[in-house]
Length: 184
Image (tube, rainbow, N blue to C red; front, side, top):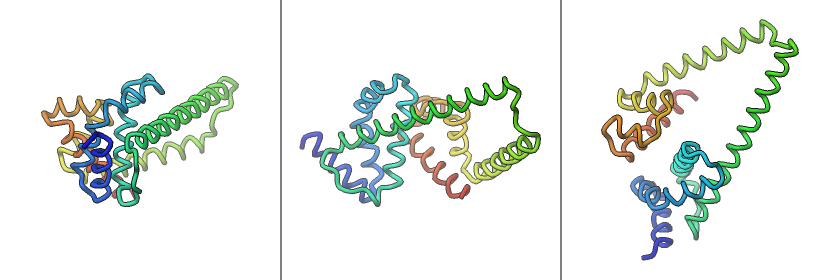
């Protein structure tokens, strides 16, 4: 069985909710995706995070996935779209920051009431997130803290917690799923 046939077989098993097949496909194409992604955005962590997000999305949508004749090409295209969306979003954020800085220089700051409303909304969101994080297991909470609050890569999280990368990835995935359910 050649690699394309193996990827198609793994894809089919993912559609049937076989989580191990997701990990196997990830292992089979990860380095190809990283090399490809670095050609689009030469930022290692951004590309790795986009790949993780892509596989999260695949797993979340596994029941809706259709058959794919060339899985690797599908993943390359999906990664390219995700990275280009990231670039576009970063440009929007950068533009907004520049506009805000320009307005601030001209003395056009937010009204006091708007600042209070924004602060209250931020506090409300922080409280909801804090309560949701308390619903996680201690291990899930630790891995979420390492990944998202300390900014470690999955490899670094796995090293620091003496786990395999797959276990760290799986634990973080389950934690995110739990957080999403509690934040809805």
